[in-house]
Length: 362
Image (tube, rainbow, N blue to C red; front, side, top):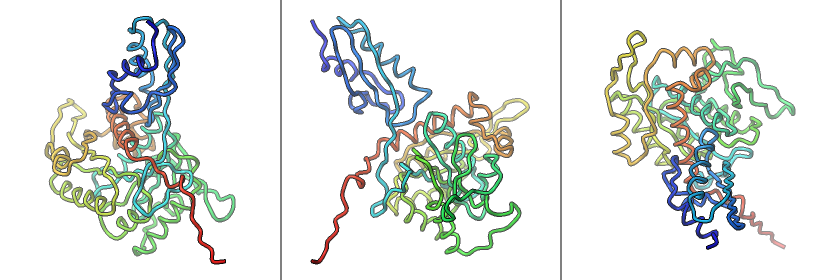
């Protein structure tokens, strides 16, 4: 009895992708099935970066097919293909940027910037091309967190090149001002500066641009949400009731402007004593998960409050690069995979497929 392509599909419909929780056939990941006698070859196309997952996925697929009667050799080519997804209605995608992920919080001091930079580094570690836009004009922190000094270069006098470290392309107002200089600007000036940072930086073929949003839900955040083509937003909070109160407002703001919430990250979830290792929920417990249940969004993960995270970001080597195989970096990477999967599940952007219609009066 010879094996057919339909037999291969039927077999793989029972194999679940551990990251999407869907089988590879339903998710349309299986491509180019070829069967020659007992020799089977196929491609497995993942819509999210998955460098650390490829071997396990290849093993799961080949194991399932090797068990088929008549199967001799199985070759599975597993790779990632990240595409552009839909943004707010009426906005066009930025050139050279496939997806923009906004990392936001209702209030300051909840570890939003630390989460943003480690999320970006985790996506890059999985093989994606990633950039970071430091949109916090009043308190830019990404230059310090990423250990980047210097001024951006310009090749044409109109645009600037992003600075780079740890495999990330980065743009920040912090590269252009003295670290001790306060930004005494009103809202319209801040919005203009942010627009210039975003549009006049020569991003190079990014799969994801992670935007470290300023804290709050005021005019600056609202204008950004309406002008920047955002694929989805990640909300960062702590378990503390007062932080959750503001995080809920941030979530509602994104909903009102048509930006999907990719999920919620609970930072400083438990304090780990550096002497004895005792864990204590000093800011409360379960607040982030309850918020997710209330709004029907995904709980992406909880991060501990540890001295190491603070020391690593202060030194310009955030956790994902300082301890890439450590337990905290593992949590960041799990959060990044969940975010990338949520983005991949969104509708594909089709605006580039439609021609512009120009009406001329002859």
